[in-house]
Image (cartoon, rainbow, N blue to C red; front, side, top):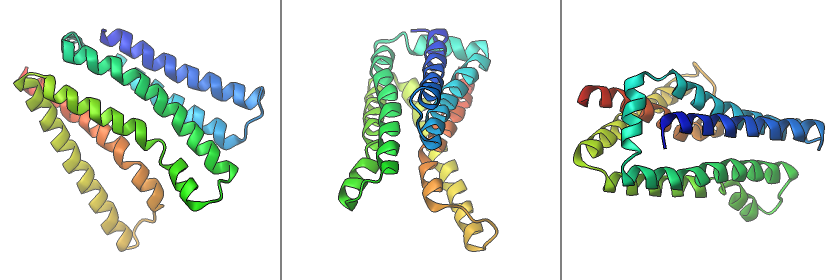
Length: 198
């Protein structure tokens, strides 16, 4: 599977999420939060697609080579259902919470449902890491390490600013952004690591 195809899959999922949000608003009369959630999911996938389109040619060629190997193909085949499932489960979880699930254990279970597909995503990522060659493994580990250090530093700095009453952030919202920031910094760090090793 080429980067061009992956890009169009991301764009298609994003447009599909927007279509679902539009149908929810106009045809099914969903509340604004649910419509906004689908539009937000769509924005995330579309932004990823646009970023992939803007990548330099050498990066797209590198990704095409990486995903042409058996480990890369297995990773991609496993990734798509997980990403789509994550989007659907995130919507379902938010919808159930907003409808007012009363018992606290059940509310906790419903709130944590989106963690399940992300755990599967981490599992296939680790499997991919074990199946790649030594150079690819070095690139991946370096990118993961840099990402973890940068997000930890950012989170720590935010905590210091919060303690000093310079900023005031909702703790729940900040915690939700840790994983997406890790993924974002991982992608950026991998881009520069590949450039150095190629």
